[in-house]
Amino acid sequence: MSKDDTSTSFAHPRYWPTWLAIGLMYLVAWLPWRLKLGIGRLIGLLAWRFAKRRRHITETNIRLCFPERDAKAQNRLVRETFIANGIGLVETATGWCRDHEHLRHRVVFRGQEHMTRLQAQGRGALILGVHFSTLDLGAALHALYFRADAVQRPHDNPLFDRFMARARAPYFDAILDRHDLRGVVRRIKAGHAVWYSPDQDFGRAASVFAPFFGIEAATVRMTGRIARMTGAPVIPLIFHRNPDDRTYTLEYLPPLEDFPSGDEATDAARVNAVIEAAIRRHPEQYLWLHRRFKTRPKGEPGFY
Image (cartoon, rainbow, N blue to C red; front, top):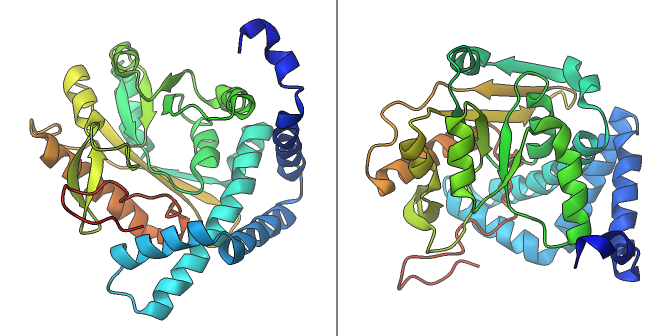
């Protein structure tokens, strides 16, 4: 698809469902808060009931990661996960389709001193993010206090990819492709903070195996490599919807000490431990719907 025919191509009937989805996101974003969250809960419950493939993946992940819970508690967490991720869709719509300044009164932000100190020194940083259901709304809320760049994977749908990029542009200074290691290093060395979430399975070639909830998980090497190449601190950022369903907490944790260690497996295990601890605070708000353990060590059977 050339740049000259992009707008015409997006008028093709195959993109009409995407346009409809975008229109619905704008509509939902402007609804009253309680109604909006109610719609999110309904979406989650419908997905829990009918999205059997995703439900199987979620059930498998939760069975593996929370063996200490009995079957009833695991099933309850599966249902809560779908509800939280349904709400996450309307939260994403809110973050993408409205000026996020109207949400400032809903934010509790702890640990700001860690980033403020680095900014005062003119230093860049690698923000260690997590794929919570509140991810995009969390990014919008974060931008009320600190600017950052983001690393992301382009969406397979070119129209939605363009919409997503434009929606995220107001709260990120730059959006970098996840394969653009050189660009990430350059931005950090120039004093920028770059938000990077390394908690997905990108396959054997990009990863080392490290424990995640006691399961050997393919974990990307990039976190330690970026830290080594830039000398920048790695600062975990965690965020969640509070139990009142009206406010959100963002928190910077202290920069990781003695990181990187020089050993990729050790660094991956350290990153996974930080992410696991963050997830355990509100496990239902994590994206358990993706196949976190799809890549297995050689000789091990698959889980899904």
